[in-house]
Length: 83
Length: 382
Image (cartoon, rainbow over all chains, first blue to last red; front, side, top):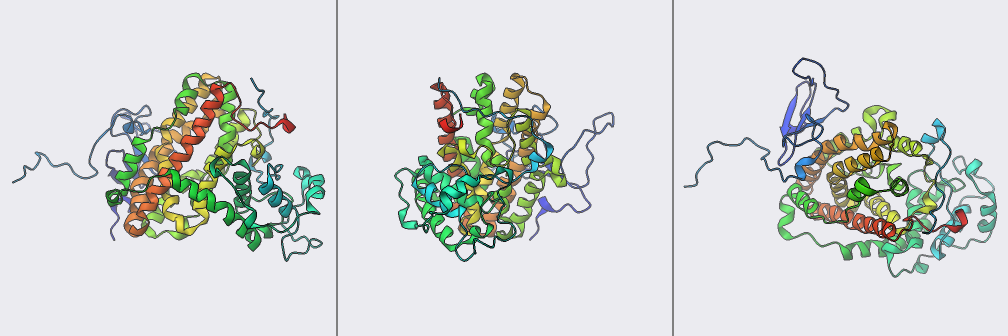
């Protein structure tokens, strides 16, 4: 069975999780706009998607406090009208 | 105000951070009397005159006088003698169970390692587990039929609906130094072996959920660096607070509610049939971790403690934001896909964790509200 979110040999995989952050796995580099490295201390990181984290660009779990909602798949625009 | 037991210790040596052998505490009732007396003897079938390697030599932590007191008079462990009316608050039962489970972790000084799989010990432990498990079932609601359709979403809903006592908010805003130290002592019952009980799930899971669990655990164990292992970060925080980070050093101070939290987890971990509950416990634990840990870190900063103490808490804010996502969607969701028959037990494990944690938090806040210590009254140690 294909498991895209855990398949990251040699490539970077970014996964938006429903109502939660982006998880980044694989041989990624995280840099600020000046090209300076942003320190990363773990193999898999969670990037803030709700915008309210106090440790941006990383997620700190705040999305749960603000009832952040977002799909884990591609959002379709414009929304499909039934019928 | 009743004086809290003296809990601070001189700054420990580096070796104390890694020391993993505790002494048996004093018994607190008939169950621990019987169990500890047996444990100080040779296990059935092992000659007391020929103590094998690993039997524990007592060392500087051992108490030979206690061995002499109990060792000569122990009778057989009798499962039928286990009686309890309120297992969740029964200190004697919870301490006996904690010690029985601890034989699978680090063991005890002066306790022969053969006890871990001694049939008489396991039968006695089962008699302790049955009323405890029944009491947990009695306070945890069953999964609704629709809930198992999407386990990650149901976990989110369960955690969002949790209305446990505001322990982390209390400590962040107005917790005292003494209350924070007590909180750390309570948490040491688990945190000094953080992640270990959940690792028992590894050989029991199918590939997708197993890979997700390992992704979380690799981080819990410091990503391959012992000094970043979460249990080591906690030991460093304890040392920075002037507490003794030796494994099991405060076992004699922990009330039933604290021991029950860890016993719940050890029980899930040691019984393969509860692998769903074990995974649900981990998911809910991670999903309720990052925000309280930020508050605990803030509390410690407000009280004037530095990075060596706050590091454990600050690390968990970011780490558990990653872990909770993996644990809910890839681990719990993965397990529910691989083994749909355990989906309801995943939700049970999550609810059981929150239910026992709420009772524990209520005990701490009620004790402090009454200007009392939340630790056991231990006059012999004061």
